Length: 194
Image (cartoon, rainbow, N blue to C red; front, top):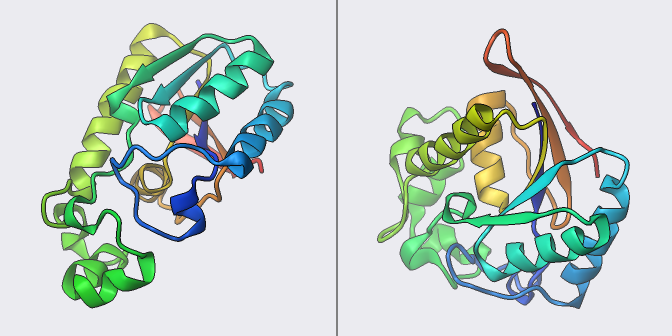
């Protein structure tokens, strides 16, 4: 199976560097253009279906791509961004001042507590990973071959760090292609396409 993990197009909050999480912010025009460009770049990848987070920014990105590539879209809460709780709405550069311990632990890949920590009222990274992997296992059971997942930056980052042992931070509208080895039951390769 090959997964194409796309970070949704830009929103005004992305441009303002605000933490979005489960806030249902819409795409801006730049984000819509990023989705159109992604569709063009993905047109030769033989994708069979699209799954997207049910949040507006991912839904709209997926809808644009679906319209261009003529593919079905399925929406799911399992592809939502991490819930950042009380950190949502803050500017990213204010996180360290407001939540110093959490911010430092969250960004220290070597910290073993990292996956058990979350912002007050939000999810832990471990909970996000569990939610996402339950969804991926469902795709395996369905026998999917090439699937586009339109989702969010932190969810992709958590997946890459845990499953691929890589630090990957995608820009809005970018895609990470990941191949899964059916024999070893592990993700064997990953490449940022654009």
